[in-house]
Length: 214
Image (cartoon, rainbow, N blue to C red; front, side):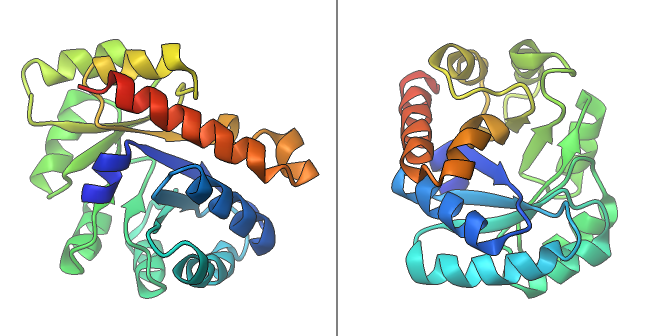
């Protein structure tokens, strides 16, 4: 939790090829990122996760690796058994919260309303993901939630871009951290094996976050 909050950004990535994920992960790490979310989106995704988490332990020792797109307790338990340090979902599931709480692993559920955020907090979720962040109201939603519930910690995912203008809007509104996917990993760069570009995108985004966070 401390690393996630301190970093302020969670790269979100999936690929069926473990080697590509490892290269992307290392590029993020070289760019200064210390949290990485591998999403449970494809067939045999858990087998890819098993490989990349061992790679991270060897090559990126300070990296906190978790899993995302988790919607049920069984899937959460599977990834926890393989060493996931946190679990993220597109929705809030009380059953997933119970599994994660039992293992003292952070669960970051997707919430689209103040009521859902409240229910998630009651279930022990310290950070709530607003998703899809652009559709639920963007930075204005964060600012309006923080007014009556200033203890709330929000991770915005969806409609987040690695530009200073975009990140400034999210963090000046009170966002704790952001999740970013494809814009951090341009297909052209991945296809070309241009890991330096991904590292630079991550480094620049982290710089913008440090500048504008409250």
